[in-house]
Image 1 (spheres, protein in one colour):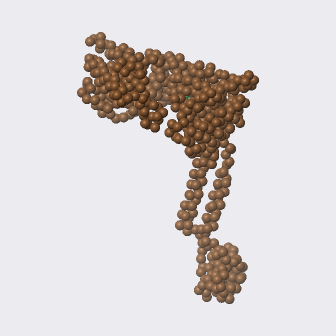
Image 2 (cartoon, helix red, strand yellow):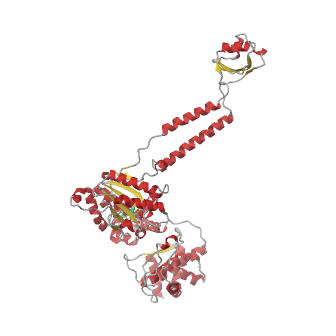
Image 3 (tube, helix red, strand yellow):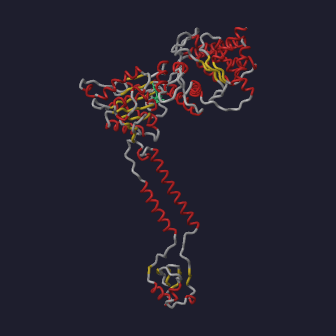
Length: 609
Ligand code: ATP
């Protein structure tokens, strides 16, 4: 259970609600005062005076309302008198000897009230006032309490170290990374031990690795283990509000971290603000943010027990100034988990889930090659949701398999497709699988499915027998060949081709080009790297480091690899068209074919043949 306690670093929010309610009341009363016609603003006189004036013919116009009377004297003076609350206001005049019928300058009227149009105008003004109030409030909360009024304040969240629950045992695998950060934890716990010996501990640690490999988790665990305050923010947060606010946010963040020292500042996605200067798309204000980070880190002295941990999956784009000694001079690489790490991540995240007794973690780990820690956590979570939907009590291999497919390919889609389309997709997928079966370097087929998911109409999944880090030229050619199995099947069966192979063609072309230009796998060209100047090409003006002549040789070599692979796929499928038909029919019928069943069909037909 995560019992970390967060609180905002911004100044405590003042509760302005009462001020606003008071303001709205004032506005309402002011408006009512404006709209209701009241006394004529003249001199207030006793009723006896008014009657005397009337009798002495000094009044030009008299209006008698229910509770008061207003009059304009012949000399232009305005007067008014309170009548109290009489049942009949005219009786006050008649009882004082005034015969009202004698006068033609007297009007008797009801006390004035708001007209319908007055009420509509009043509501309209109130709506404007309330909308303004609401908008200002939203703006403020968007700025985390400070809003537009405190845009320079950092949004870093402070976790009280002692309450930070994540510890190293909450991270599976990453043994080397944990070992590397151990001395940082020790320094934060016992800074004196190091300062007495004049040791300088790293000011900055850069965690590099693909998304979901546990960079944030590791940073939190360092804070958790050492019991220090943890300030977390991300590169993009510095820039999100107003251009130029980044630098002042950095100042604010560092000053707060210093005040809470010993502490850790964690900046996720540092590449958003720390690209090589001069190449950043975002421009000068991003550079200001980066400069400010460098200035702040340079300002640390040996007594500043603040360590900055930054994470990125694009170390290649970072400004070299960031990596100089005294800044982020320690880099820790985190890679996708290997088999053993996947097993331990799966075990860790299944602790709070009812897993079926016969669940084989080794099998799941083998099936999830290329998955990150975050993907694996997601698979178990999806499997739990699926189990709940099915009203089952324990998670079995079936739910894990479905969840793993969903994490990679997206949820199954219910699209209406014609019988012809279904047939084409079935042959296409059967083509991929069957071609791979005849290529010795190919990974075994794990599953063939024609259930549409995400952008794809079907999929053939392979299961590598082990984690591979090195790929041979034959392996690349094998992969390209079975990528073309789908297109080849369409051509053989329908004597026509569809756009269904576009993704296969894209991936195969990319792979073939890398074989030629990066991996030196073309016999004609040899082991030379051809590339584009990344920095110069940052704005899209790709600068080739090779001639036009070489460019055309590269194109020819790429095309040779692709076309020979396609031809090989065509040859395999033409030779085994009967098996292709059998697999495709099975898919049309059942939509999903497991690797074992696929192998059984192929092997039995080969033996018969
Ligand atoms: P990003 O680059 O996308 O920010 P990240 O590398 O920071 O990703 P985390 O946010 O640390 O990845 O990991 C996401 C989730 O994945 C974690 O909360 C955790 O559930 C799970 N996870 C990743 N790696 C591990 C691991 N080694 N052990 C246990 N859980 C892990």
